[in-house]
Image 1 (cartoon, rainbow, N blue to C red):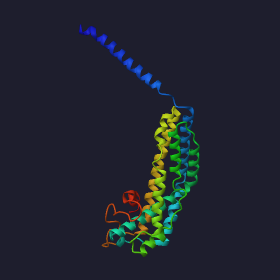
Image 2: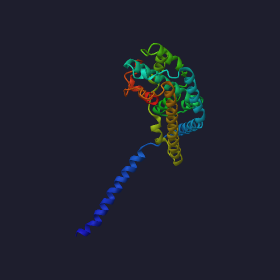
Image 3: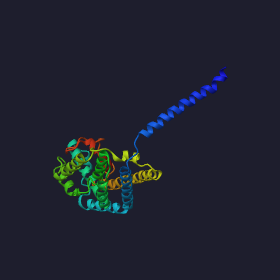
Image 4: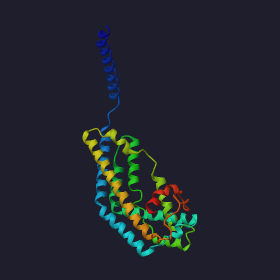
Length: 283
């Protein structure tokens, strides 16, 4: 008898599976297909970001030249301006030195990015022209355009002048130029980031063909290469600038660098936690 019910149990199970599958199919069918305009917009975003990444990767040589030029500027104008006595000085001195280091890191970023500023502006303009039917997607594209052009209009500071000004006051207060840079950094971020959805997370829903998905995977790979290049260049030239601004102490003369990790709070406009990445690069 038990054997007799086995086929029946199988039929019931199969019927149940088919019912559930049919329900899933109905549910999937109930979800409207992406509108052609949104599909076209998503493809445009992927294409434009891919082109920008390719341009950026081709500019590695020019970025290195920009880093080399800044290093030569610091070597000629303010080598050794951050001695170990300051880096191991009072909390105020360490904080001021940290602010100055942030300025150096920010200035380095501006100069390394200068070779792709024109491409970034062109990308931002193209993203602003993408037309989606959904307001959230339009806001996301606009936000992405702003992020890509965030600091293009910011002019590099006179790092050596500010380092010398800090040294003149014994590293007891931020020079006006340093305060200005810190203020610009956070003012621009506050007005440009965190407003609008992250369109990159929404793109897969509108990339409906195999070719679309392959293009997105390629973009992800290029993004990873770009991020690796950016990190590598930043670390390379930051280390060189750090060794010039604060040369290693002689044997028996201290270790150089900040004795605290992280350093004490900034004297400038921004809390120290927000500066840790810049500090780590130039420490």
